[in-house]
Structures are given as C-alpha cells and as structure tokens.
Length: 398
Ligand SMILES: [Ca+2]
Ligand SMILES: [Ca+2]
Ligand SMILES: [Ca+2]
Image 1: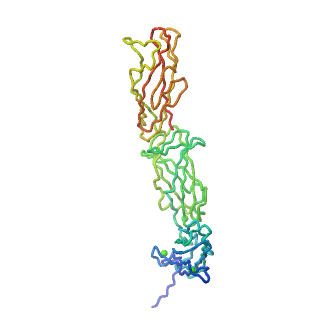
Image 2: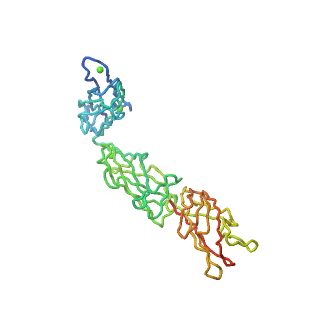
C-alpha cells in the first residue's frame, strides 16, 4: 500500500535568510584613473547569506564619485522585511546614500536590485582612503525578535529642581529626599521601534538587599534609528526610604517578549545617606585663672588648638560636604558687656574672621578632615570676669 502525504509548508523547518548576493562597483572617472573602489560581501554568522557589504575607496579626492550595484535576495523559506541598512565608517567628508532597500519585503526565492552612491566632498583630503560597511537588518515576517537594552548608554543624573547635582566624584551616586533622579537608556528591537515605542516598554528597577523593589516606568523620547529608541524617566526620593539600591533595566516589546538582557544591572544608588561631621573638642577656651587675658592682646590661641573637623560620611558614599562657620558674641558672665564674635579668628586653609553669618571655611570629601586653629584679639578695654560665646559648625551637602 502506498501512502502519499502532503504536509503544510509551515510544518517543516523554516529558514530565514536574507542577504546580499552580488556586488559590482565603478566610478565617474573618464580618461584618467586615479581613484578606485572595490567591494566584498561577508557572511559573518555563516548562515549562507551575506549580511555585510564592505566597500574600500582609495586615492579619492574632492569630487570623486563611485557607485556599488547590489543584489539582495531571500534565500530562505519564509518571507522577510528589510528594516534598515546600517552604515559604519563613513568619514565626515564623504556622502553615502543607499537606494531602494529600506522597508522592502522580499518573498522566498525573490531578489531585488539596489544601489549605493558614494560622493567625496570638497573638504576631503587629497588621495584619501576610507572603508565603510553596510549591514542589512532584516526581520522575519512571523517570528518576533526580543528587544535589547543598550546598557552602556545608561545615564543617571541627580537634580534639585532644575539644578543638576554634581555627584561625579562620589564612590556611590547618592540622592536625598526632594531630589530627582533622571534615567536615560537606549533600547533596540529588530522588529522596528514600533514594537517598543510605548510608555512602560522599558523600566528601571531599584532593588535593595532586603528585597525591597521599586519600578520606574520610562517613556520613549527620541527615535534614534529604525530599530533603536531612547527612553527617559524620573524618580523622586522620599524621606522614608533609606539605603543602597542596585539599579537595573527591564524591557518588553508589544508581544510581551522580554529583552534578551532584561534585568541587566547598570549601577548603584544610595538613597538618603547619613550626613555627619565630628569635632575633636566641644569647648574652646582662651586664657585661664593662672594666665588671664590682658586687654589689648592680639592673636591669643585657643588652648585646644589644633581643632579637627572630620566628614564622617557614615555610609561611605564619598559624600562632599562644605563646612560653614558662624558665631554669637561673647557675653560677660554677670553684666551686659560683651566681646564681638568678629574678634575671634579661624585659620583653616586661610584666615577668616568669625561673624554672625555662616561663611564657608572649607570643603571635605568623604572621610576627609580639616585642621584649624582658633585665635582671639582681646579688646583694649574689658572688665574682669568670664565671657561666654558660641560658634556653630554647619555641614552643607553638595
Ligand atoms: Ca578609477
Ligand atoms: Ca549571514
Ligand atoms: Ca520585538
């Protein structure tokens, strides 16, 4: 008994193969022969279809023109579409244009002709040489390609309102409550940007060691090519969150396919790091019962000099802190007589008089110290007794 079976074509192993099948080239020179152009096809992944065309232009000069005639064929068993032809290596002084390829659908067994026009511009050097390549990006008509997160394009910036915070020297980027973190990343999908250009296709995930996870959906903001799109989003730190978070990116296309590198880690972020400075003393004194101050004396040093101010940076994020100082006038222990605080001096990186208004005396990165000395000029007239004043050290986080 003989059985004849006819299988529907999609039951077999389908092959998707679109590539260049031939290239020929020439130039515009008549009579002389100075410039030259040559081309070759490369099948990088070894599937039998050449997806890369390499063109070498040599001895070119302003006004030199060349062309490459191409044939592109679908050698597979299923239909496909050319999404883009990506050019790489074209110098600024040359113009390369591809005709009749982008957006073209090709059925199995079908081939199309195309042309590349090359023009060397007036700002080109004489006898110039360059090599560029054109890569076909084609997509299967029925198989979905997962998106890909271009994680090296990830940018994270911290803002307070419109003002950008410079946290570039930090060991770990940090953000305080009220500040905003802006995220930016490029994502590509071989099925075209239409497959990923929707709100929430891409999101940034902030996850802590304790498993706490926050999702920040990003919006498409710029079309970069036929297949790549830039996404942006922002997140505002709130006061109840504290700690170190790992920052990762997820992406999904319209078919709910996860990016081939979905969840890729792109950095760290510390939310609300602790701010703390220390002083090695709590009290300064000038003169004593044994050696009292004499009216009119200048530059009397505090007995506790030197004084060390340290930026403790308890979370070790590399936080920069500006150190400001201000003071209140000295008052006599039992009368209204006083000594202005401006009679007191601090010598840190330079000499400053202390006033009622805070003034900056230095800037410290994480765990750095500032050594300073305090001095006093005694007024020319002064009733005997004890005088009490106050100075305040204020850290301002950058
Ligand atoms: Ca020639
Ligand atoms: Ca190939
Ligand atoms: Ca896709």
